[in-house]
Length: 375
Image (cartoon, rainbow, N blue to C red):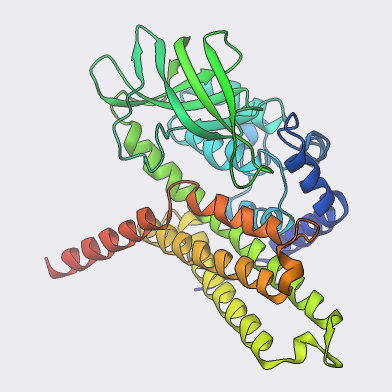
């Protein structure tokens, strides 16, 4: 069983990294972070559209390239390493996957075509309170095609055109709906978060028009499958972030001298980098296995995705934290870029649910596997 990428996939990743190195500097990330009216890097997003990245894994019949999840994984790793401040994940990993999985033929034709053409930015609005998850029955309600309620923290909601929203239907069942956000009955309020380069908003609905996505009452099941797919892609973003944080720390410690020696020569610093590298490689190995499960639609996907998610959360937190330590007191200042990775690591650690949620899924899947073998 080969868990490595093909030569074509590695070439795609290499070219994506070169492009992002040229077009997505840390100064660009800071510009989005520091400008409260700038919700994403529009110029960078437009260049990605010109490269046809949003349509990479969308079927050709909808204007996409029709490539697989492995190509999307290598692209995600490059995006994570560059800290790209664009709504790629919300649009492609989440809304796009939900449409591919549960959308009607008409919804797929309309919205997947728009995503592939770069005409649509999406988001997923599920959480209604801090600590909430997709397993909580939403308080938002849809009656006669009108949505009322609110969502607490929605990444990319300030720039999105279309939202996937969870709500109870007329039968009080957990359901999903597509919500155009350019309605006067939708209120968007920016929310302060630890990572302003990935802005979020609070959404309020007062009779907004929606249309169902998937069968009524199947909302949680659809979201679980979408989140498993997205978890693999986010794991690759986190691995990319680990690699970038490790490289940043090593580059600085080689140039910084103390007591007549490069800081990198001190054993304590070497131990930090060794720990970072080990955590990164463990996360990468788990991400590779999850990518295989995703690409082959293997029954192990829920377990593989959760394992990749947990190890990637832990690894990116460790690498971003130790990168700060490797820079010493300077690493904690605004002028240095260490905090950019620390902020992104914290943001990604709670996106799709935090580590406890995914650890619980690991335990649940392992127990189910054990029970099946004993039966």
